[in-house]
Image: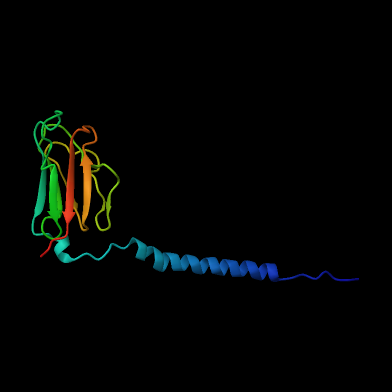
Length: 153
């Protein structure tokens, strides 16, 4: 009679696979994931600009043809006025919605969440040179643009 021979290769392979997967999981959660979620390092002058840039939603902006975002073509300089504040001075709720999805590596996604009720403000800190075009979601004729540039000094 011959006795069946068994190979432990399958069991050893399975154990090696489990150990390999565990090592990958530990590396991913301990090193890779925290590094990929970390905010970038940004100069203190950019994080705390000298002043802010105010863009007003003026009274009567809801009427097509009237002024809406004032100024509607704004320029900002990093470390000077890169904290931009939209203030709703109209009697109607409005939004600040990017024409195309836009994100800043430090501040995240650009655009007001929900509507700005009369008297409300929306602030966004720009930390990179960029050009953003935006509009009001319920009133698409209300448009504006903002160019953020590096300060020369």
